Image (cartoon, rainbow, N blue to C red; front, side, top):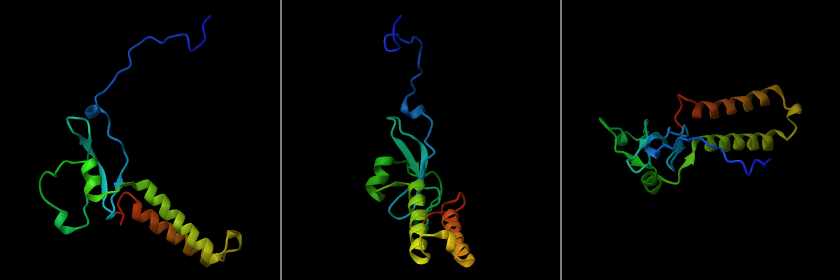
Length: 135
């Protein structure tokens, strides 16, 4: 009897071209705080990004948007960071700030200190929530 390394698996594994691959659900932030989301692939398979809600008025336009590729966005507005990473980093900053203010033992924090901390955490979540625009 052969080991699992000696037994070959037969069958067909589907291979998709990059332009047919599903889009990642990641959103990125550029150095100006603008959010970029996947909007398709070029004919060569490079990811196209869109900025659905630009904060600068002159960046808002009508009609079809220019198809920015990932490399073009990084060159013009980079570096890009995953939005989730930015949110996580901001939450860690809030934790550090409050631990320095009120001490490391949260069990001895007064009720108003806990409420202030929770309000700060909620503000970060609101900023990065589905309806919020990260700045």
